[in-house]
Amino acid sequence: TNMLSTISILAIFLLFGGSNGDSVTQTEGPVTFSEGAPMILNCTYQSSYTSPVLFWYVQYLNNAPQLLLKSSTETENQGFQANLVKRENSFHLQKRSVQISDSALYYCAMTD
Image (tube, rainbow, N blue to C red; front, side, top):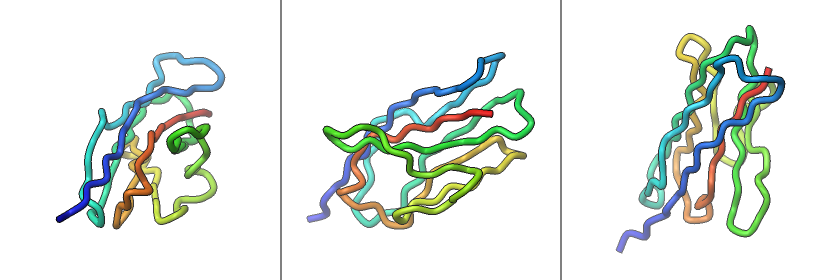
């Protein structure tokens, strides 16, 4: 039998320094992936900043959120990767092969 890894997605919007119509939009969840399947979680943004910085945080069960990726420094961590595509206003989170241990809440956030 094929085990399923359920990955719950919760959209939050973190913005430091004011809103001015800025926003972050995520994949609505929860979503379920088969173990070993590729995963993509969408994150798009609208920003008045010239060079916004995007983040992905992960929160495992009974743990505090922790930084997974930051657009200005690293684009790969623990098999996850995300690339800031400014022309599409996107910072999608991807992983080639999802595991049951990846079950968690994933947060996309933005600052200037």
